[in-house]
Image 1 (cartoon, helix red, strand yellow):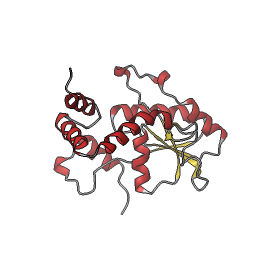
Image 2 (image 1 turned 135 degrees about the vertical axis):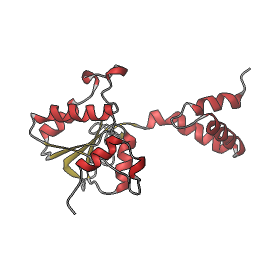
Image 3 (image 1 turned 60 degrees about the vertical axis):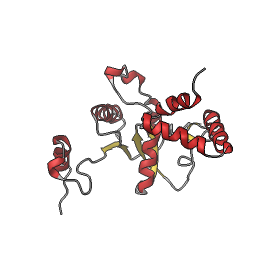
Image 4 (image 1 turned 180 degrees about the horizontal axis):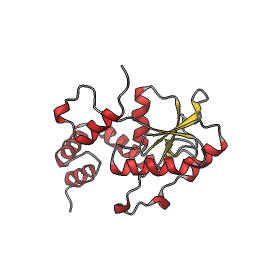
Length: 196
């Protein structure tokens, strides 16, 4: 018979960013709390796929067919920010600097992983740009090889629609030291410089 603590630890360790030691701590944390906490956690995990779906408009996760951002009439509908994952939407929203709409890809081009252009779901984005008065598409994919390739592919795909495509800036983080910065980041910091 399998050890239930080891079984729980193994499942928790499969979560992103959770190693074996953290998974063990989480398993014991669940055990040390009242049983109703573990039951509520289990119920929430069981119900998540039933209660949450992808927004029909942007692809972000939502409780209903349309997410809160897409249904918010105060958001700018003429600006769409393209991101790789729903967690990217959360990160941008925390900054409270962007008031437009989103489009979540749920993937990036990665030929080595079998993710080619035909598997990238761009048609809904193209349709949104064609049907609405979209003035700008902001490409906020990760600043990685796959993210850059995806951004370039999308920009080329939207070029024929005559919509402005912009790329998020990249460079040095606040408080970052030049001596510890990689060459690509430093190069982009110089390319994206502004007049003072």
